[in-house]
Length: 176
Image 1 (cartoon, rainbow, N blue to C red):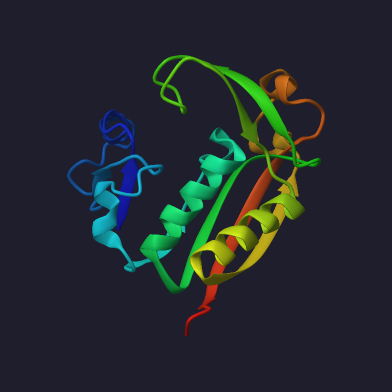
Image 2: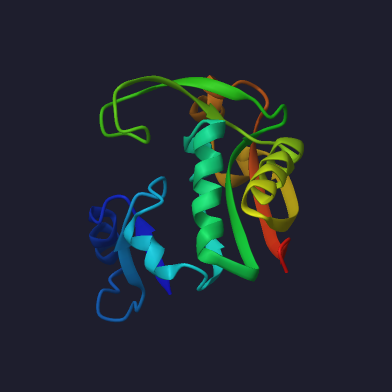
């Protein structure tokens, strides 16, 4: 099992929280998922299941395309990409303000794409075409309240904010 994050500090926090430093056997790789030349390239074509929770919605559509392509480079036929994140019934891009060192690396304003079924399927259709792979996509939406969010937590996203779960399966490579 491999785990990755842009900051290794989170692993130490996890060990402290779960008290499992001596028993948890994942290999941690500090890497930027947006960097196609990151240390993750050592896993090219070797990963069967990707658990990608609360990641894609941090980025605009074009950065999401890059994240998906970088994941695809690590995948092989039969791989799964599963996870959950905040989505939108309307599948919208919303402006956000960030601080230096945030998900964009610098302070300022950018957009984040919040998906619904149609926009998520379109993303995977696009990256499939651009990487010569094919993907089946399943999604499920549910109220964020069921995930423990309160209205004030998501008010900035508007009334269409929702919980968004996904399963993407790599079914083929077009060149096969």
